[in-house]
Amino acid sequence: MNIILLGPPGAGKGTQAQRLVEGHGMVQLSTGDMLRETRKADTPLGRQVAAVMDSGALVSDEIVSAMIDERLSGLASDTGVIFDGYPRTEAQARSLDEILAGRGRKLDRVIELEVDEDALVTRITGRYTCASCGKGYHDAFEKPRQDGTCDRCGGHEFKRRPDDNEETVRTRMAEYRAKTAPILPLYEARGIVRRVDGMAPIDTVTASVEAILADV
Ligand SMILES: [Zn+2]
Image 1 (cartoon, helix red, strand yellow):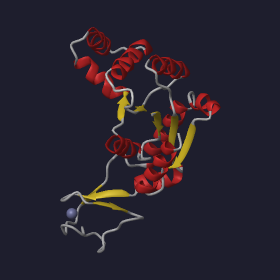
Image 2 (cartoon, helix red, strand yellow; image 1 turned 180 degrees about the horizontal axis):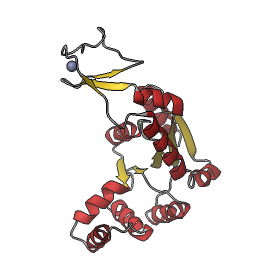
Image 3 (cartoon, protein in one colour; image 1 turned 120 degrees about the horizontal axis):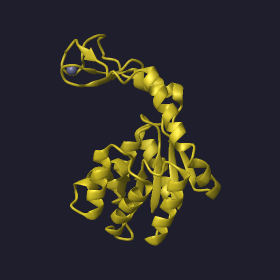
Image 4 (tube, helix red, strand yellow; image 1 turned 180 degrees about the vertical axis):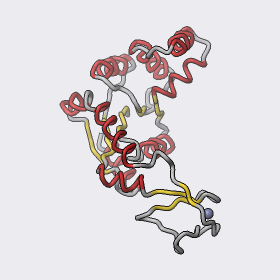
C-alpha cells in the first residue's frame, strides 16, 4: 500500500500518519525528514545533499528522486509507504510513478483531509493553554469550568501561540491549495483521490482513512 496523505496545517495529517505508522507498520516518507537524514549519512548521496543544502540552493528533483528510491530499496516489499510533502509538481508526480514502478510498487490512493476554512479558523484561533500546567482550552469548545481559572492547577494565566491567528491560518490554507493544485488533477484523472472530513473527531477521521485503505 502506497499512499499520499494531503491536508492543510491543522487538518490532523500528522496524527493520522502516526496512526497508520503504528497500526499498519507503514513508513512515512517526508522529504524534509529524508533530506536531514540523508545529509547525515556518509554516502555519495549524503555528501551531495549536504553540499547543495549548505550552498543554500534548492535540492533538485533528481536528488529527491534518488533519495526516495534509496529509502524504498531498504524496505520490505509489503511495507506500505505514506508520502508526505511530496510530490509538489506534476514532474515530481511522474517521477514518483517511475520510482515506484522500478520497485514493483504503485501509488494506490491519494487521501486528502479536507477542512472547512472558516471552521479551521475558529478551531485554531480559539485555542489556548494554561501558562502553568499546559492544559489546553478553547474559546468555543472547552472553557475552564470557572472563568479564568485552570481546571487542573488553579492557575490564572493563559497563553496563546502567536501563529494561532486568522491571518496565518488563511495564508497557510492558500499556500496549501497552491501546493496541491498542480498534482491533484493528475490523480483525480486516475480515480485514486479520496477525501475525508478532517474536521470530524480524530477517531472518526481514522475510521474513514481505514475504510479507504481496506477498499484498495
Ligand atoms: Zn493549569
